[in-house]
Amino acid sequence: MSFDIFWEKLDQQVAQNVQDLLNSHFRNTNNKPSFIGDIEISEFDFGTMPPVIEIIDMTEPFPEFYLPDDEVEEARSEADLLGNEEAEQQSDELYNRTEEEEDIVLKKDTDAQVHISFSYQGNMRMTVSTELRMNYPSMMFMSLPIRLTVTGFNFSGTGIIAYLRRRVNFCFLEPKDPNESLLKEVHIESEVGDKEKQVLKNVGKIERFIVDQLRKVIDEDFVFPSYYSVDLD
Amino acid sequence: MSTEVPNSVQAYIDNAINKNSINSWSFTLGFLLGQITVVLLVLAFIKFMLLEDSKNTNKKRPILFPSPISATKSSSIPSSSSALSTILSKTFYDPIHHLPESTDWLNVLLAQAINLYRDDAQTNNRLLRVIDEALNSGLKPDFVGPIHLTQLNLGEEYPLFSNARIMPTEKLGRMRAEIDCQFNDQVTLGIDTQILINWPRPRIAVLPISLMLSVVKFSTTLAIEIVNPPDTSSYVAISALPDFILEFDVQSFIGSRTKLESVPKVTQLITSKLRNLFLDRFVFPNFRKVEFPDLIQKTPIILQEERNNIKKAIIANDYSMNQESELYLSSTSANSRFISSKISKPVSGIVGKDPPFS
Image 1 (cartoon, each protein chain N blue to C red):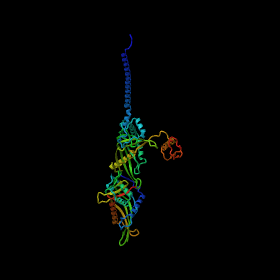
Image 2: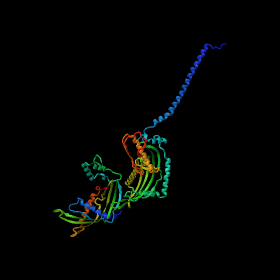
Image 3: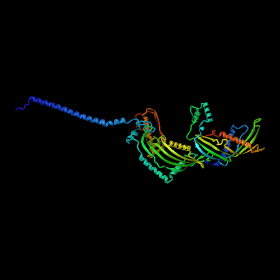
Image 4: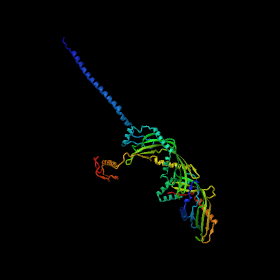
């Protein structure tokens, strides 16, 4: 293990912050299918076991990180239309625009990338409340409340964290076995139905469905060449 | 017998006497001519052999300085830097023709001084403690944990200075000393520290790292210049010229239970950071400043006198200008009053009169 992690420092306050963050993310997302109602995280706990993180290597960042991404393209074309010279100049500084089509982000000596392997087999706890909706014959004709509680999971694989000037890029790498997913065993307890009325517990199919959805999100949005980017300011 | 001289004989004798007078006159003439010729020759000798020297050397001293190896442009010495020219002539230093001087004697003295420090470092830990404190003071960024010194090796070789010379600088009429320095050794600093992850909580994760930094080669040309700014105290500026060589050797161990050894990227990051530190602090046009100690304690009276002298110099300049000028001079020290003066009429030819507000 490379890092010494003091997991107990992730206290209630941090858990609350993560909960709020996830909730606002779900409120604002448009990706939700129409048969799923509002998603809310009602409980979040980090558990007692830290992940094991090991540094495999440190190298120069992937060249793909230096290509302009969609955001920048949009910003630049907007600035172009408005004739806003200053915005153009700013994005030109970051991306060495030449007369040709090729745009390269200027590389700096302090850019670096860390290749890590992580393994989490812990008891992180999260409770998600949502509802299944039937929109036929009309919108919200019937709805079925669902509560899912994740009580632990196994999440391991490799990933990279790249520092480019004022930006941090993060993504996972494809596992050696392409059929495998990064998210392995997930322990879920589920409750379907209104608490006052009849409740079905631990319905296997629903649990599998949710876990599959989660795996899909991870594999599509967070595995190279897709990556998540944070601007440090 | 009569002693009458016959006429012919008389005539002959007269003639002879006449000839004699003419001869003596021409003899004198000849003598005078001879003397004058000798005098002229002597004067010519003096003129051409002795006085000609200064004319010749005046012609030979060039107006332009050759551009030295360092990046200064060729410049002319204007007449205003007469102080510098006086110094150069009185110290018999001709910047164009003077060969670079060896500093072997200096190398020996310096080596002895360095030995003192090396011996001292071996016998007690004072130097270790000083460096430990210096590393852990203020400038440490907050993602770096406490730094522990594990090894300090001051090397076994000595720096060798050579080729000392006086060269002109970019500014007109200014000179500086340049001296080459070479140091090939292994001066090693070993440190143990930690990289801290402080988000979302301080020190939530800690990455231990061990480094061994060595300076392996250092080759540079040092420039030493005495700077005399008008308002502040004078100092000596020491800097390294931009064409220097500085090589490091870095060994790194990263990680707690599983360690990653001497990754090239880490070496590159550390080397470029150290090099940038050196560039910012020591390489021309940045410099290290060594101030001259003030010879006299500057009391308020002396300060006031200095200010008055400056004012007088300014007034004298203004007297020669035929235009309206407003002169506001103020001093904020406890002993002086707020002084302001307005000179609205051209006052000519009154140089040396005390200004009305002293």
